[in-house]
Image (tube, rainbow, N blue to C red; front, side, top):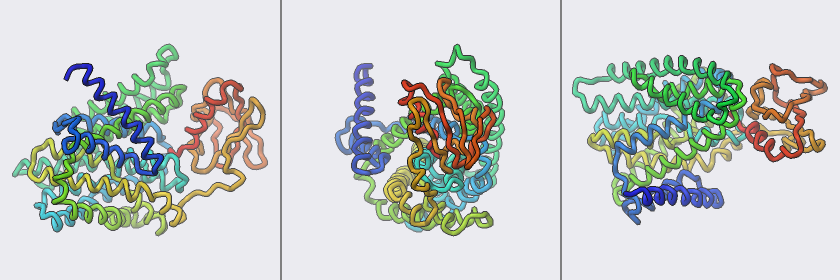
Length: 481
């Protein structure tokens, strides 16, 4: 393929992806399902526009894409928010992952007649929730903050556990002298070393990004990519989880007060979405519809059991003594979205050339499809039925209103991203200033370390010509991170 054809192919797929995304939004179809369909449409069973069958290349693309998604997820969060949900998130990321893998393995063994090791491998592949889907879903919802933060933290931390389990079972299948103890050691080694490298690199990154000179401000995204890549590579080189390490360094950079934080967030959000699109199109390319029928029935049953039985059981066992009521536990169980992570781990299975690899990959397809169609389209409805939404007072629904030509008012709702952060951390451009905080009957003149609280009203002075730009800032503030 020469350069012209390569550029035309990539540009054409990306352009068509925009059309698909618009159509999906217009007809209220999950965009990820649309990208799956796009990959299948241009793949080998139909027009054969792109004949992509290199599992190893797909594995590399998937690793890069997932690393980008986890880095962006960490960047859009903060240490303080993660601490609030740390205990349930860690329980869901360890106990929950193991329980999900074991129960899925039992079902797969019975329905697909997979040998136990292969059934456990399939369970490991689908055992984690998807960071990209969870981050994208909960940024713009009014689901209770504790629930959203728990699910976001879980999705960032449980991927490394699922990946380590998957690698461990692949090794067990390949090596006759391997056993359960080896898998356990591998998981602890990967997570421990990944945590160590992530914390070390995170500390260095916080120091550097807080002192990044203005003269290299345009290269801030380059610096963040370099930090993420070096962290992932260092952890992977010594046998640790690069995915856990890169998530932690993203957290560190996102928690660092910096004039470039908003720019980095926007850049990496776009990069992460592009990675997600690429992975779902890639899954569509690998799926051959004519080969799906022999596992379709059993796969649909496994997918439904994972949504309605296996994940809820894993949540109840993981949060047994934690302060979640029954409605919240039901929602945590229902909100275990699957997406890009099983796709990446499915390419691990294909590239390992083990028996039953195609079967496992095809089952992953049905599970991801079911999650996107069932959970992705009904999450807000289920949350409303369970009563786990934060409802704003009607008089506060308009979070922003013009007061004077050069003064804007922003109402801080409980679920907004800036609730509970300091003024210096909100990423306000240099040409704008918080001049007053109205807190009940009090009028506060803010300083850099003043903490913004839920239900505050911020009075912000903005040049009239900058009103369109400040709207983008307010949109970021409204996100749940």
